[in-house]
Length: 326
Image (cartoon, rainbow, N blue to C red; front, side):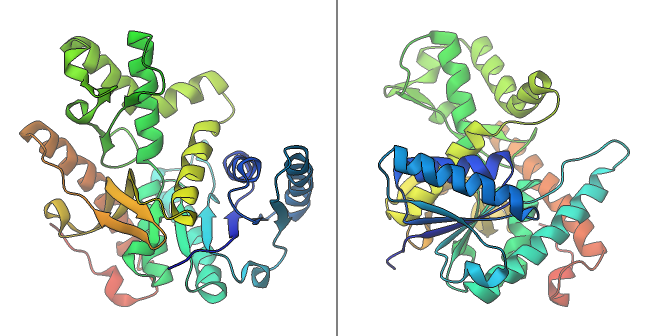
């Protein structure tokens, strides 16, 4: 399927706006559209970015969707909309609030652009990807969550901090959910093709793995009032480009598992080939026993949050509220 020229980003905060800027500066698509609950801020950012695109001699126009109908004809949606957790708010409270936002967003997407592809960025990422899939009714190949590219990039940076050479040649690999239960894979990580285990000691690798698992929290600790957005946005832009250019490059992304790795009816991060149809192929890599246990723990964590939604009869289709255990 030939993908077109229009990308709509829902949520024009730090992450969403930086995704738009990254796409505009590369001329990845003809039009980037912003949709936000504060349209005036979205208009200001869109105007600023359109002018930046002209300075960069790029053809991309950044505009604003003031109403849902403006999103018609979109090829790829990027969803970053959601609330951050506030003092006194439980994880379940945040989960329900952001799931409701995602439900409303994908309802508009389904009505305005039924043939589009959805990239989810909102947290909790894996669960929001599940919600977007179920509520959109799209094929599982056309709903993908951004997580593994970001986590792999963080791991690659921490490897680089250790060795101080090979920048741009480090290939790190991460699986599982986006959070503390992610599963970094040193076995599949290399520097210019050399296995990581031949470069770093076991102790150094463990340190890299731990920093990767808490990479987002480390940045929050420095920023105090917000979270990371440059790396998440660039990781998302890479996914958009892979779809629009049909590169079919392999990236770790959050997708629906339907028997893969022995799990069903859950979303988790695994290696996929990403192209014009979304998920072109899902790869099942060989894990050792420790990695299998950690991946199982990660999947269980995501499933427990999905089951919170099901117990609250959240999903529109009653059959989607039936709790399954694998």
